[in-house]
Amino acid sequence: ETGVTQSPTHLIKTRGQQVTLRCSSQSGHNTVSWYQQALGQGPQFIFQYYREEENGRGNFPPRFSGLQFPNYSSELNVNALELDDSALYLCASSLVFQDGTDTQYFGPGTRLTVL
Amino acid sequence: AQSVTQLGSHVSVSEGALVLLRCNYSSSVPPYLFWYVQYPNQGLQLLLKYTSAATLVKGINGFEAEFKKSETSFHLTKPSAHMSDAAEYFCAVSDRNQGGKLIFGQGTELSVKP
Image (cartoon, rainbow over all chains, first blue to last red; front, side, top):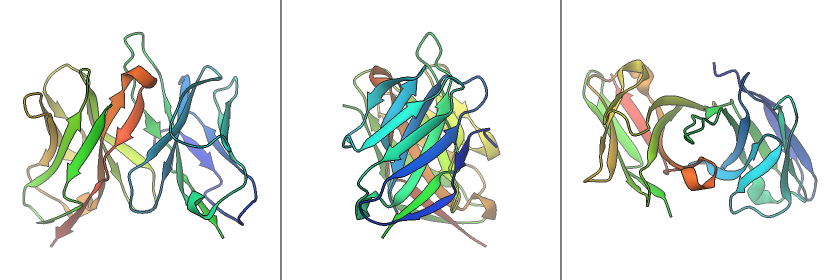
Protein backbone atom coordinates (compact mmCIF):
# COMPACT_ATOMS: atom_id res chain seq x y z
CA GLU A 1 0.00 0.00 0.00
CA THR A 2 1.40 3.35 -1.08
CA GLY A 3 -1.21 5.58 0.49
CA VAL A 4 -2.15 6.95 -2.94
CA THR A 5 -5.81 6.44 -3.76
CA GLN A 6 -7.72 7.01 -6.98
CA SER A 7 -11.38 7.17 -7.85
CA PRO A 8 -13.31 5.82 -9.53
CA THR A 9 -11.81 2.38 -10.18
CA HIS A 10 -13.55 1.94 -13.50
CA LEU A 11 -15.41 4.34 -15.75
CA ILE A 12 -17.26 4.00 -19.03
CA LYS A 13 -17.92 7.05 -21.17
CA THR A 14 -18.98 7.74 -24.72
CA ARG A 15 -17.08 9.67 -27.35
CA GLY A 16 -17.34 13.45 -26.93
CA GLN A 17 -18.12 13.33 -23.22
CA GLN A 18 -16.01 14.83 -20.45
CA VAL A 19 -14.50 12.95 -17.50
CA THR A 20 -12.89 13.85 -14.18
CA LEU A 21 -10.56 11.45 -12.40
CA ARG A 22 -9.45 11.99 -8.82
CA CYS A 23 -6.33 11.23 -6.85
CA SER A 24 -5.44 11.56 -3.20
CA SER A 25 -1.70 11.83 -2.62
CA GLN A 26 0.34 10.12 0.05
CA SER A 27 0.49 12.16 3.22
CA GLY A 28 3.36 14.70 3.19
CA HIS A 29 3.90 14.59 -0.57
CA ASN A 30 3.94 17.89 -2.48
CA THR A 31 4.00 16.68 -6.08
CA VAL A 32 1.53 14.70 -8.15
CA SER A 33 2.05 13.30 -11.64
CA TRP A 34 -0.45 11.73 -14.00
CA TYR A 35 0.28 9.00 -16.53
CA GLN A 36 -1.73 7.28 -19.24
CA GLN A 37 -1.11 3.59 -19.80
CA ALA A 38 -2.64 2.15 -22.94
CA LEU A 39 -3.12 -1.59 -23.13
CA GLY A 40 0.19 -3.39 -23.54
CA GLN A 41 2.24 -0.19 -23.24
CA GLY A 42 4.36 1.53 -20.64
CA PRO A 43 2.89 4.55 -18.87
CA GLN A 44 3.16 7.88 -20.70
CA PHE A 45 3.62 11.12 -18.74
CA ILE A 46 0.68 13.52 -19.03
CA PHE A 47 1.63 16.31 -16.60
CA GLN A 48 2.88 17.07 -13.13
CA TYR A 49 1.75 19.49 -10.44
CA TYR A 50 4.00 20.90 -7.74
CA ARG A 51 2.43 23.06 -5.04
CA GLU A 52 -0.70 23.61 -7.15
CA GLU A 53 1.18 24.77 -10.28
CA GLU A 54 1.73 22.76 -13.45
CA ASN A 55 5.37 21.73 -13.46
CA GLY A 56 5.84 19.93 -16.75
CA ARG A 57 3.66 18.45 -19.43
CA GLY A 58 4.00 15.57 -21.82
CA ASN A 59 2.83 15.30 -25.40
CA PHE A 60 -0.90 15.49 -24.68
CA PRO A 61 -3.41 17.97 -26.15
CA PRO A 62 -4.94 20.81 -24.12
CA ARG A 63 -8.17 18.86 -23.64
CA PHE A 64 -6.21 17.05 -20.94
CA SER A 65 -6.09 19.38 -17.95
CA GLY A 66 -5.49 19.10 -14.25
CA LEU A 67 -5.70 20.65 -10.84
CA GLN A 68 -3.88 20.20 -7.57
CA PHE A 69 -5.57 21.36 -4.41
CA PRO A 70 -4.05 22.76 -1.18
CA ASN A 71 -4.42 19.40 0.49
CA TYR A 72 -2.36 17.94 -2.41
CA SER A 73 -5.26 15.97 -3.86
CA SER A 74 -5.55 16.24 -7.61
CA GLU A 75 -7.89 15.94 -10.57
CA LEU A 76 -7.36 14.96 -14.18
CA ASN A 77 -9.97 16.29 -16.58
CA VAL A 78 -10.36 15.11 -20.14
CA ASN A 79 -12.74 16.91 -22.51
CA ALA A 80 -14.15 15.72 -25.81
CA LEU A 81 -13.26 12.10 -25.18
CA GLU A 82 -11.91 10.05 -28.06
CA LEU A 83 -11.78 6.29 -28.45
CA ASP A 84 -7.98 6.37 -28.08
CA ASP A 85 -8.37 7.87 -24.61
CA SER A 86 -9.35 4.42 -23.37
CA ALA A 87 -6.56 3.48 -20.98
CA LEU A 88 -5.48 3.03 -17.38
CA TYR A 89 -4.83 6.43 -15.81
CA LEU A 90 -2.26 6.39 -13.05
CA CYS A 91 -1.60 9.00 -10.44
CA ALA A 92 1.75 9.15 -8.67
CA SER A 93 2.70 11.27 -5.70
CA SER A 94 6.17 12.21 -4.55
CA LEU A 95 8.14 14.43 -2.24
CA VAL A 96 10.73 16.39 -4.14
CA PHE A 97 13.94 17.01 -2.20
CA GLN A 98 16.31 19.96 -2.58
CA ASP A 99 18.71 17.89 -4.65
CA GLY A 100 15.89 17.08 -7.06
CA THR A 101 15.59 13.47 -6.07
CA ASP A 102 12.20 12.02 -5.56
CA THR A 103 10.46 8.69 -5.75
CA GLN A 104 7.03 8.44 -7.28
CA TYR A 105 4.49 6.21 -5.59
CA PHE A 106 1.61 5.09 -7.72
CA GLY A 107 -2.05 4.61 -7.01
CA PRO A 108 -4.05 1.66 -8.31
CA GLY A 109 -5.28 3.55 -11.35
CA THR A 110 -8.61 4.33 -13.00
CA ARG A 111 -9.59 2.23 -15.98
CA LEU A 112 -11.36 4.47 -18.51
CA THR A 113 -13.26 2.94 -21.41
CA VAL A 114 -14.54 5.22 -24.16
CA LEU A 115 -17.25 3.77 -26.40
CA ALA B 1 16.35 13.26 -24.75
CA GLN B 2 16.16 10.42 -22.30
CA SER B 3 14.82 7.02 -23.20
CA VAL B 4 14.60 3.47 -21.93
CA THR B 5 14.70 0.23 -23.88
CA GLN B 6 13.66 -3.05 -22.37
CA LEU B 7 14.98 -6.01 -24.30
CA GLY B 8 12.38 -8.74 -24.57
CA SER B 9 8.70 -8.08 -24.20
CA HIS B 10 8.22 -11.50 -22.65
CA VAL B 11 10.53 -13.62 -20.51
CA SER B 12 9.70 -17.09 -19.25
CA VAL B 13 11.64 -18.89 -16.52
CA SER B 14 11.13 -21.98 -14.40
CA GLU B 15 10.45 -21.68 -10.70
CA GLY B 16 13.79 -21.52 -8.88
CA ALA B 17 15.69 -20.30 -11.94
CA LEU B 18 17.53 -17.01 -12.31
CA VAL B 19 15.48 -14.03 -13.41
CA LEU B 20 17.20 -11.51 -15.69
CA LEU B 21 15.25 -8.60 -17.14
CA ARG B 22 17.23 -6.24 -19.35
CA CYS B 23 17.06 -2.47 -19.42
CA ASN B 24 19.22 0.00 -21.32
CA TYR B 25 18.88 3.74 -20.97
CA SER B 26 19.89 6.88 -22.78
CA SER B 27 20.48 10.03 -20.78
CA SER B 28 22.46 13.24 -21.22
CA VAL B 29 22.81 13.65 -17.47
CA PRO B 30 23.59 11.17 -14.71
CA PRO B 31 20.35 9.25 -14.53
CA TYR B 32 18.06 8.24 -11.77
CA LEU B 33 16.72 4.79 -12.64
CA PHE B 34 13.82 2.76 -11.34
CA TRP B 35 12.24 -0.64 -11.65
CA TYR B 36 8.51 -0.99 -11.05
CA VAL B 37 6.32 -4.09 -11.04
CA GLN B 38 2.70 -4.22 -12.11
CA TYR B 39 0.39 -7.09 -11.23
CA PRO B 40 -2.76 -7.60 -13.32
CA ASN B 41 -5.30 -4.83 -12.92
CA GLN B 42 -3.15 -2.97 -10.42
CA GLY B 43 -0.97 0.12 -10.28
CA LEU B 44 2.82 0.20 -10.24
CA GLN B 45 4.83 -0.88 -7.22
CA LEU B 46 8.39 0.35 -6.74
CA LEU B 47 10.92 -2.49 -6.67
CA LEU B 48 14.12 -0.46 -6.40
CA LYS B 49 15.83 2.74 -7.46
CA TYR B 50 19.28 4.03 -8.35
CA THR B 51 20.10 7.64 -7.50
CA SER B 52 23.90 7.79 -7.89
CA ALA B 53 24.89 6.05 -4.68
CA ALA B 54 25.92 2.38 -4.73
CA THR B 55 25.85 0.86 -8.20
CA LEU B 56 24.36 -2.40 -6.93
CA VAL B 57 20.89 -1.68 -5.66
CA LYS B 58 18.85 -4.10 -3.60
CA GLY B 59 15.10 -3.93 -3.68
CA ILE B 60 12.09 -5.72 -2.33
CA ASN B 61 11.19 -9.37 -2.83
CA GLY B 62 14.80 -10.40 -3.41
CA PHE B 63 15.33 -8.32 -6.55
CA GLU B 64 18.46 -6.34 -7.27
CA ALA B 65 19.83 -4.29 -10.14
CA GLU B 66 23.28 -3.12 -11.13
CA PHE B 67 23.96 0.25 -12.71
CA LYS B 68 26.66 -0.01 -15.38
CA LYS B 69 27.50 3.36 -16.84
CA SER B 70 29.85 1.96 -19.48
CA GLU B 71 27.06 -0.25 -20.82
CA THR B 72 24.23 2.23 -20.10
CA SER B 73 22.40 -0.66 -18.51
CA PHE B 74 20.34 -1.28 -15.39
CA HIS B 75 19.37 -4.95 -15.56
CA LEU B 76 17.09 -6.49 -12.94
CA THR B 77 17.94 -9.85 -11.44
CA LYS B 78 16.65 -12.32 -8.88
CA PRO B 79 18.55 -15.50 -8.05
CA SER B 80 15.52 -17.75 -7.71
CA ALA B 81 12.13 -17.11 -9.28
CA HIS B 82 8.89 -17.69 -7.40
CA MET B 83 5.49 -18.19 -8.94
CA SER B 84 4.41 -14.94 -7.29
CA ASP B 85 6.98 -13.03 -9.38
CA ALA B 86 4.84 -13.41 -12.49
CA ALA B 87 3.93 -9.86 -13.49
CA GLU B 88 4.81 -6.98 -15.82
CA TYR B 89 8.06 -5.19 -15.06
CA PHE B 90 8.88 -1.65 -16.11
CA CYS B 91 12.21 0.11 -16.17
CA ALA B 92 12.09 3.91 -15.98
CA VAL B 93 14.46 6.86 -16.06
CA SER B 94 13.72 10.12 -14.29
CA ASP B 95 13.99 13.28 -16.36
CA ARG B 96 15.36 15.61 -13.74
CA ASN B 97 15.27 18.52 -16.17
CA GLN B 98 11.49 18.21 -16.39
CA GLY B 99 10.34 17.89 -12.84
CA GLY B 100 11.41 14.32 -12.44
CA LYS B 101 8.87 12.90 -14.83
CA LEU B 102 9.36 9.21 -15.43
CA ILE B 103 10.08 7.84 -18.88
CA PHE B 104 9.14 4.19 -19.03
CA GLY B 105 10.18 1.32 -21.18
CA GLN B 106 7.61 -0.82 -22.93
CA GLY B 107 7.63 -3.39 -20.18
CA THR B 108 8.64 -7.04 -19.88
CA GLU B 109 6.11 -9.68 -18.95
CA LEU B 110 7.64 -12.31 -16.70
CA SER B 111 6.10 -15.78 -16.68
CA VAL B 112 7.17 -18.38 -14.12
CA LYS B 113 6.63 -22.05 -14.92
CA PRO B 114 6.20 -24.61 -12.14
